[in-house]
Length: 125
Image 1 (cartoon, rainbow, N blue to C red):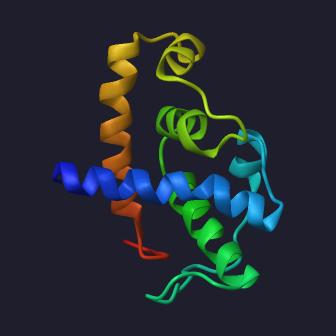
Image 2: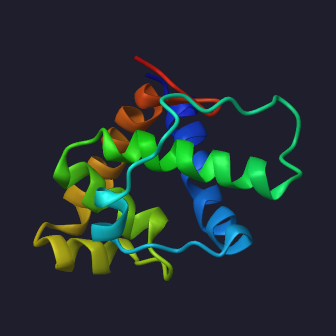
């Protein structure tokens, strides 16, 4: 994967907080891990999201892709993008007991893994 694909994954993940605010559904990491999404694949139109239903579908697509990652990957992305208050790389490193440099490198790899599982609102097999 290219650095452009990493940037795409990060942009998708950055949208999660806005989608959670719009839908009123911020969840803890434990709640996200236990959440069962009914739709196996969620189609999102190519146009800008406009309705609450579209916001919720996109939020669920992000959660589905996140749930397919290993625990360390989920933790990294949760603290970086999905928790209500974003954490700095230093805070994430301290919480996960890794160096800041390791977390930064890991975050890029995890973003690639996330993108493999997510594509335009539809899960990628």
